[in-house]
Length: 150
Image (tube, rainbow, N blue to C red; front, side):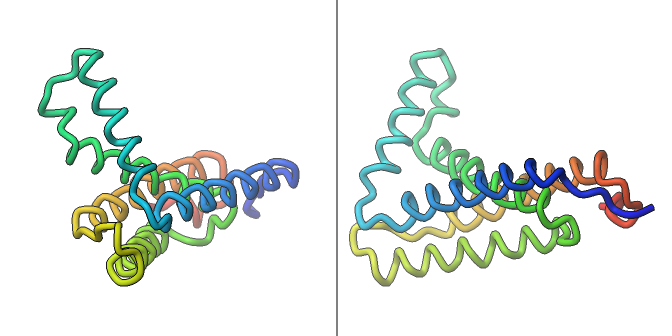
């Protein structure tokens, strides 16, 4: 059974969403100032605390970790919809390499930014989560048995 592809209009929408999200990530991760990401972490932590979440969940380091996971997940998810032949392993490895590269750039070229191992772990986890979600969608709607194996 041949692999069904997204309708061309749907592929276009997914491609635009992917490019837009990559642009947002590039701006957030490679901006010389940490002001934007810091504001987001502080705001999410504050709102979580105001909504009654326990302090163990609203600690800034935990909020930052979760936001890093969430930030990287859309890339492999949307990418899997466009390029179903790439596996979750490919997307996770790509997420690791991209995250490592970003952290090296932050450490070497962006004096106000801080590179951390935790960010690499969180971003790679986000890539894995997005890759699995994309793989599940492709398995459910892809049509070709080759893409139904995890």
